[in-house]
Image 1 (spheres, rainbow, N blue to C red):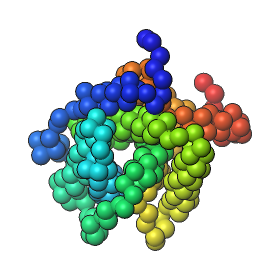
Image 2: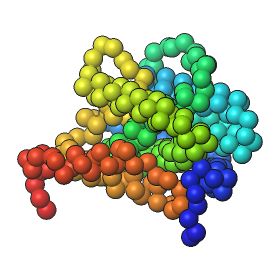
Image 3: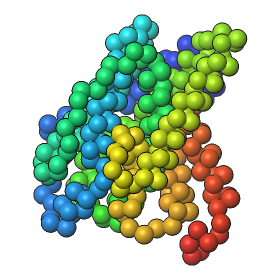
Image 4: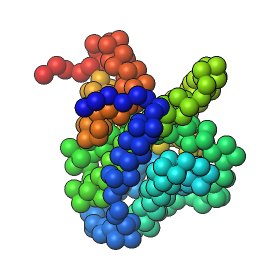
Length: 282
């Protein structure tokens, strides 16, 4: 395929068209929730993520929908509004799941509407890049280990693939946005973006280190559920996350940018990781 210039109109048309054309129009109210045996139901209720999942998905939907309403470019607006609808649909699926299986969820106030919708979307999107990378690995472990029955795994398969589409859109949208800024203004954009990425990474690190603490965080809930899936080495888990991240993103046009920060950091960590943390070979 002929390469395209990042930030060009052709680039914008490609990442927006790809997002719109790969939309899955499933309806949450039509989901057939499987019956769970007592052990599977106990495992589902025992995942330490549901309060944060409900809050996070609801807040994310508001941020993305706000930007979709404010975006002036009709091509970008269509794709961003569609992503906002998908985020709201994620929140609805989680709400229906908690109702179906009687999972207690704490009430929370309506999420605030962001004043700066562009930077709210950017910051939230980079948080999704972090969460999704590890969630892909956790989902694969849950599927392979039959931690949950296949019928329940099948309900969440479209959501996992939507997350791949969301982070693909985010990195291409951010690159396009940067390219529209005159050269003298790009260092400021880069610095502000780096600060937002660092803030999201710090949120996830804090949440991972304080699992089970009394103060909940609405960020990084995917990273907090790894302990529920049994015993596996950190090295094996990170390698699985890399493989699943690659697999989830592989169906889309190779000319589109892919998230690179988290995969690169994980590859470096794997090279530096002590051999003792790698488990038995073979």
